[in-house]
Amino acid sequence: MKCNVCEFRCEIDEWSRGRCGNYVCAGDTIIQDPDIGYLGAYPVSIETIPLLHYYPSGKFLQVFSTGCNFQCSGCVARLLASGKSLDLPALTPSQAVEKAVQQECLGVVSTLNEPAANYYLFRELALQAKEKGLLAGCSTNCYFTDETLEELGKFVDFMNIGIKGYSDQSYVNCGVPSSEPVFRNISRLFNMGVHVETSVVYSRGNEDDVINVAKTLSNISPTIPVQVMRFIPFGDAPIELEPSIGEAESLCASLREHVDYAYLFNSPGTESLNTYCPECGSLLAEREFYGPMGSKPLKPWINYTCTCGKNTPVKGSTATESFNEEGFMGGYRISRAFSMVHAVLTCLGILDDHRVIEIWVKVSNPETLSQIHHMIQQPYSYLEFVRLVAEKANASEKGEELISFIRERLELVKSLAAENSGHKVYYCMGSPLFALNAGRMENNLVAFSGGVSINKQIQKEGKPGVNVSPSFINEQNPETIFISGFLSRPLDEFYGLCQQYGISADAVKEHRIYEVPPSWDFGNPRWILGLMYIADKLNPGSSAIDLKKEADEFYLRFYGIPFEEAKPNRSFHRPSSGIWSRHVMRYTHA
Image (cartoon, rainbow, N blue to C red; front, side, top):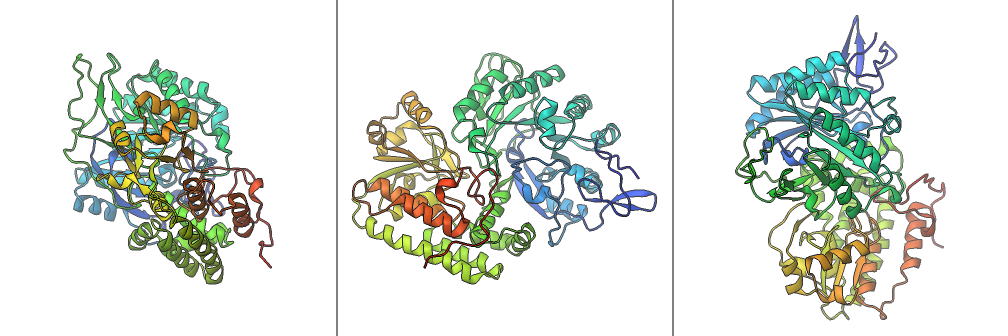
């Protein structure tokens, strides 16, 4: 039988479950695999879905399952998109709706995996939500058939549609023949009154394709928000495909020539997350970076009409208070938690996806994730995180080898720190005005190295940090500034922003601003190399650290490749972009 949920129209029989792996044949009917349910349900703020023009600051219940009909390289939710079975207790739609009611959410939203892979499950969720007076929506690639879309448009209230690009080639790269059904469906949904916002990936070199997306959407309606997702090479993609924040900001400015609202995500400190009046340019709503693919309003966006009289089309009223998610919960941050566990397993030599998933299941309950969130913030408590993962993997001996390696280097840095004279340090991510939270690992690495983190003076917190003023940096006058190795910015752009914002701290004057190597200061065991990098910069000329030797030893021992062969990326678990064939024999010392 032919499945008519999405444009692939897979043939389903007793031997085939379709491209997404989630549909089965029951007599003369295709049904959802009865074992499929929702694997998580967390209250989130709507801006982390992300949606910016829909019930601003509203609290919604995020749910997710497994499976996807696309095959995109570098997927931020690779585990869930893979469709691999997760031995987790699943929620039924009615249980998810009840949870949304109990937690006083405005509605339910399906994210992380593709709802086309769970269409009948999502339909039931949405219909039950409507019966309870709740809103229902999803994040989707929108590759539905005409007949499915007609039905979907009658019970869904809002969508964030992920667009891979304008050209067919951009879809071929995801194993999909054409972009045409997506733009056809966006037009139909908009005309049906569904609130539509779009996300489009921007990797270096595809600027024209992104502009063509904006032009095509403008023909439907220039009021449809376009969210530019700056490409971050989490997977095997080379770091050269990552555009700088400055390049992405320039592209956003170009998009506003075609659409009224263009926003830039994955770019801490950017002003391109704000809403500006398309008529006069006035600032209407101010936001800050809030983790991968997320944002957070700095204050409630109450008035949608500019002083010039131009009205911004926003559906729903603004919540007076923003909801704040705990730890790894909410939006796409749960995928970062998985990557952190995966990173440790890689160092333990556990590379098989099925084993990785099996171990993830053992630690993915909310209580353990909360425990992990605290463990990963301090050098010594991180060792307990390694021990926890190693025990769950039945690899305690390998875990102790990794712990021993890290502990020896901690003692080395501790001896250097005793000689440090309280060097003042500022730690930021992507922009001089985006400060990392005081309690994060990066600032604790500074303190461990003997430095004094000025970030500790900041009282408020965000995820993973907050915007600060130029005056704060100037008043604290750091002698050294480090830029995060997770989301960075080229030094020439960074110094240019310091000049633009009037930042005149000693670190700027004396050119003591450093980009930490990618993924060396958070999220994976390579932070021990980042700690030595920091200690070396804070002790110039007197450091006993041979960083190249240390990096080579770490990469050989735990990744099976020399450091110079590794091609940097932003991944926690992959030490190199491109093809990485780990050596069969692990490197050991005599």
